[in-house]
Structure formats: C-alpha cells, structure tokens
Length: 456
Image (cartoon, rainbow, N blue to C red):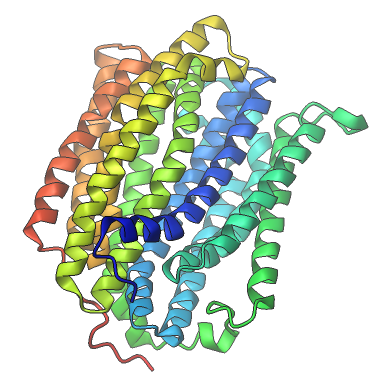
C-alpha cells in the first residue's frame, strides 16, 4: 500500500482519489444549477416548482447514498485486502436494494405528484408546474440508482475517472437539450419545465449507458462482473453487511427527510422564500461538490488502512486530513460569499427576491466550514471505522430534535425572514461537530470489519 506518512504523499493521494470525485459531483451539481438558471427565466413559480421536485429526487438520492456508503464501508476495507470477489458481491447487494428503493420512489412519484408538491407549497401554479415536471423526471430514478452503484464503488477501488467522464458528457447533453426545449430554440417546441425534465431524463440514460460501455470495454476493470458474480452473495454475508449498513441507511433517510421538512417551514414564507433558499443552496452545492469529493476520499483512505489492519496509521491520516480540508473549506467559503450578489443575479429574480437570495448566500457561506467538519467526521471517518450507530443517533437527533423545531419556531412563532431562519437552523450543525469530534478523539469508532471475513 502507498506510503502516506508525509503530508505531500497524503495530499497527492487525496487529490488522486478525491479530485475526480469532486469533478464528477461538480458536474452533476452544475447540471442542476443550469436547470435552475434556465427555468428561472420562466418565473419564480417555475423555479420553485423545479426546486421542490428536485427536493423529492434529493430524498431518494440521499437514501441511496445511505445504502451505497453503508455497503462502501466494506468495499473500502475489502479493497485494502485486494479482495475483488467480495467487492462484486457487495455490488450485487447494492443493485438489489437500490433497484427496490428507486422503483418504489418512481411509482409513488408517478401516482401522487401533485400531493407530493403540495406538501412543500400551497401555490396552485407551483403545484401545477411541479406535477408536470415530476411526471417525466420520476423516470430518471431507476437509471440513476444503477449509475450510482458503479460510480460509488469506483471510488472505493480508486477508479474515479470513468464516472467523471460519464458525468461531463451527461452535463453537456443536458445543457444542450435544456437550451432546445425549455424556451423552444432552433425551431423546437417550447416545453418549459417539461422540457427541462426531458433533458434531464435523456442525460441520465446516456450517463448510465456510457458508464457500462466504458467499464465493460476496459481491460481488466475490477467492476466488470457477470450477474452470477454480483448476485453470488450468501444470506449470511448479506445479513452481516446489512448489520453495519442499516444504521447508515436509516441515518441518511431520516436526515434527508428532516432537512426537507425545513423546506416545508420555508413554504410558509411564500414562493419567493423557497426560490431564494434554492438559489443559495444550489450555488453552495458547487462548493460542496469538491468538499464531498475530499470527504469521500478520506473515507476510502481511512477504510483502506483499517482493512490492512493499520490502526494508528488510519487515525493519524484522519487527523491530518481534517485540518487540511478545513483550511480549503474556509478559502472556498470566503470566495462564495464575496461573489454572492453577482451569483444571485444569474437567476432572473425580482429585485426583492434577489436581495433575499443574496442574504441567504451569505448565511450559507458562513456555515459551510462547520458543515464540512461534520461531514468529514461522520461520513469520512467515523463510518469508515464501522461506527454507524453513533453516527445515526447523532445525525438524526440533531435534525429532528433540534433543527426542525428551530425551523418552525423561526418561521411560525418569531416570523423571521428566510435568511435568519436558515442561520438559526444551523445551530444543529455546530453541536453536531462538537459531539463528532469528541467521538473521533476517543478512538471508539475504530473497527476492522473484514479482518476475519471469509465469504468465498
């Protein structure tokens, strides 16, 4: 295994793994940003409708992230042992659970689109446009769940360039089709939000196809397995992996539903407030794309060290990476805040909504470093050591017992504007970091999960 004893070697390794992940995430986020900017030209109701629709997609994708990152704890440790046979079995588990979840989300969304949109907004125009968008966008859920298995497992085995290439191609297609269909350019029909949904669906299908073509046409690619290799896992192995992964699945599912409840609270402030919050969060997601890449790379490196039974090395690497990533995060947050007003002007908002969105951007920027610390401690370090139950209780507890009550107090009782509500909610992020750091320093999170495994 590569020597990671010096900061230079550690930075090189984190960039090798994390940068392609970051670029892939950045491209995917940019796809969503372009959607929002182009839709913004159709009015604030259209932007709010697509924002809410993407919130439903976000719930699904974070739930899948819980599944795949939970299983990925084992994948990273098996890669530390260079055990490809069991990695493919883990992929089979991911396919099985992912397809079940994405199919369920697809059916519910297609059958109850208006009911889902109305949870977040009472504006009839928003509900109508959101329903129109979801009737097509819901068809992306299943191909995305399949793409996500290949992409996430690629991270654990240090093959991150292929998912990055597929995402860049998908972004290009999505942008071009948005241009054609949203406002009816080049003689194409003017489809508005439906045009954006068609563009997104096409891009996601191309992304999955391209991923599979590249993987299965690459010489000796570790993920190019046959069906019998993917689904050759035993029930005993499935049960053992799920025991560790299940708290992560519950963690991410409960967390994403919880933060989506924030948007229900924002809905009481009106369509402009939802649009303002969405602008701030969409732009901050561009920064998060890089930070998540670094956090995921941390999880892979720490997991690899634990799989190779290098306990002290895993702790040392984790400690150094926390410091490095925090410095980078501070730098990015300052840049984001500095260009806040210019960024808000890209969405075709009214002057009042633009001012509101700018203030939301400043609040979001202020808390990005704190959120990054929470992410790297929980997802990048504690989970990689199998400490999934602690992470579950911490994440869920902070959102549901602190964040959500604060959101509704801010909006319904104190009747604060959207940007102050967003600031108050972030108190839960601060406390989360305090508890996660204490757990990290205790070393109680360290577990070697695959040391005595024999699933051949």
